[in-house]
Length: 228
Figure 1 (spheres, one colour):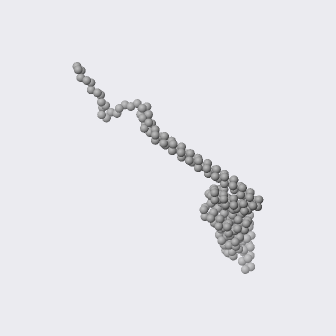
Figure 2: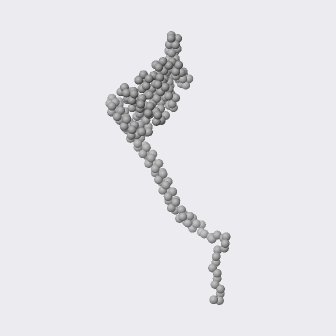
Figure 3: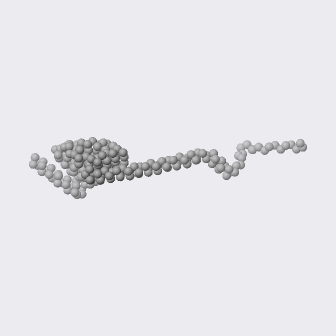
């Protein structure tokens, strides 16, 4: 050959080869295509799971609410045995739902109407121990106090009423519970605690009718102490 073969050009060390930006993006996408697809699937699955769980909870609550309405109708019609059965089944099937918590209170009322205070006490103590929503705390303690009074455990009834008054809830119910506690402590011959309960009504709830009744009860206790 007359001319020396031209040497094959090699990249200069340290000088990066020029790559089209579009090709670089395409290469990046291809390299990560599988991981991006997996991530998209994971997001879809998580989103679907949240939706399914929320929908399932709503359906469960709706079913429980329908059964609660049927049980209430049975109680209102005077069929307390059927109401008791329906309410017990609802609580066992839909435990934790708001309808089931409401059913626990209705069941306690039905038991008291059937003169089954002991059963009501057991049910209510179990219900309170689980930690119901704030909406049901006060009413549960009020019913427990009533059941304890029905069994002549007046001091324990007073404690139950006080526990309800110390729970989050509507003020008018808490004021009523303090009055209930005062009455129970009077029946238990614990005048000091009765006075303390009535004085709390005057301190924490100034508006009538609670405050008016508390003043009357305190006046009665004062006259009783003088007469004694």
